[in-house]
Image 1 (cartoon, one colour):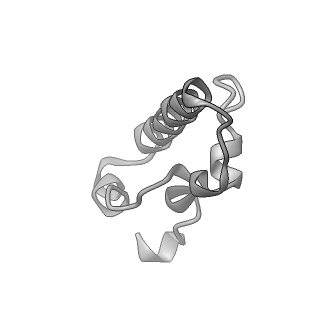
Image 2: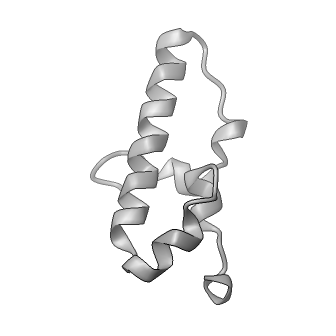
Length: 68
């Protein structure tokens, strides 16, 4: 996450992040998608189906392991 500079998306809900213009909003969406992909690629296959319904990387990251 640090290497891809998207760590903030696991610490803050994307819905709370604010973009100043269309280009910034586009970058937020792109980075959130990258963050989501990194998380989903990092978990075991049987867990992925339980995380796909989560809307944001933050929601995925905060999902308690006992619910997976």
